[in-house]
Image (cartoon, rainbow, N blue to C red; front, side, top):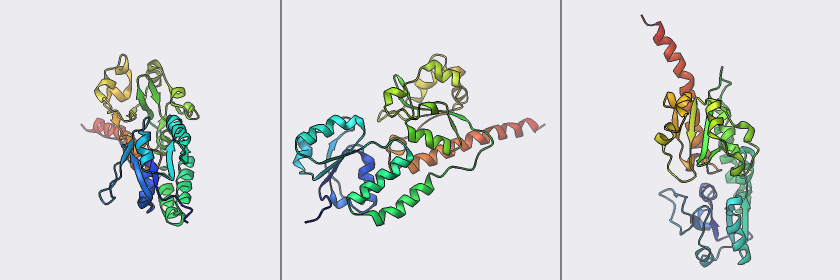
Length: 268
């Protein structure tokens, strides 16, 4: 009998994405609604959101492994364990932890050799840009009410892209509630770029620009407020390469803008 799981339910999108990439999709029996499989992947039943799940529908799939993520899914994991399921819950927060988690999942399904080339691509894809002459100040908003600053891997990616995360001191805080910030702190930090991704809720860029006192913020004055798709930045897996490319492009554009302005001033 095989020691690798044959019926896996993924309650988190990055796990489903990774299993597809390393050729273990046939072993996936169900997925979260937040995972959009590529066209060539056979569809799978959707049995959960992120903070909620249909336990009965999961049990009907007779999983030999359920993969969950973070303290947000702790209660779901506990319910499944009490019902006799084997549950692997990961809690990665940093880029190093994300790579280690991807390696762990590959080992669980016996796909280590295939995964290694993808892990190399991941490491190369998130490599820091050359040290910039100056770093634009960046505020990343993970939630709006109350404002919550970016989780550790987002903060790391901002700095690797050449930006300065204005709340990098909060990076060690693993729980979202511990990264809550006050509007006056954001105003005082005067970010030159604002990135937002609101955990599954569309970002209202206009509402950000209309917040009381935020017209003082350089990012608001210059129209540098950008939504990043949750699938590209809030799912701690291989898909972060897409989010990092966007951040690099936008931070790079912020570097270029002052140069363009200087050239204009020299034109008679």
